[in-house]
Image 1: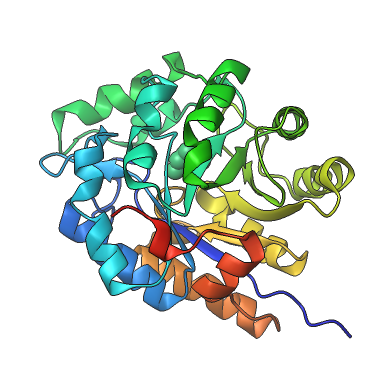
Image 2 (image 1 turned 90 degrees about the horizontal axis):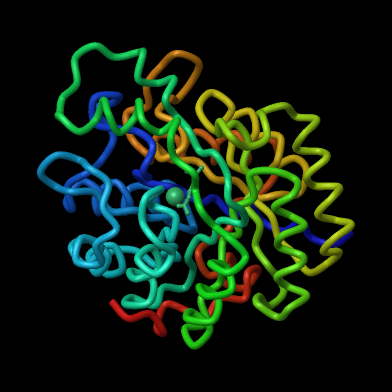
Length: 310
Ligand code: KMH
Ligand code: ZN
């Protein structure tokens, strides 16, 4: 019998949804982002999906200089694959959002496969006292944002990034995004195998029902055949159930405080590494292996750590 492929664990360390008030564990200084990323890698994450934050107040930033404060430290301490977000702001242009990736030329970066509502405003009602001034309005006003990823934006980003040979984490929040990806492959923007992150539970995207996972997977099988690898991210309380199910369906998984602050229903996680350790234990207890960073590189056909610029 053919050996089962090991499961790639991605860990998304801090993101742009949650704010410091929501959890003391959410990292936002360079030290904390680096330390939590390194610990997540030691716990079993092969890929680290990274955003930057303002160290003084935890605000979201896409300034390449902010990434420079932690990328070299993480690279020096781990052999994990670094994946830089290009979606980390709902307000900036695609040119601004790809600037960190253009400067640091990582092995991977995210690519969001359609324009959409992307809202987390219901979270604003849960907190009365906020640690920092910016947080309440940032969260409450997310109901006014359109997350812009037009076909022109996707083509512009692919053309500028082509010389860097970066593998995209194609973030697909709904079935239509899979068709957008197929179209972009057909016009030559991306090379197979593409890596698709199926996303469930973002307000504005498809909901966290397991039926939807089956449907997304079946649609991707039809559209991409052998030309894709896939992973699953469930937001909030859907994180562990969706990761567990995906790992049993032959998929890969993404955890991390970017997408969920919880370790179990109603209980805050202490760190990113705690979430990685939990999903690793579940995957291994259910009889699968987890991928090392080098196995992830082989499965996703990455250019290698020696070719990044940080
Ligand atoms: N937190 C994810 C649902 C990106 O970085 O490009 C969205 C995300 C976007 O990861
Ligand atoms: Zn992200």
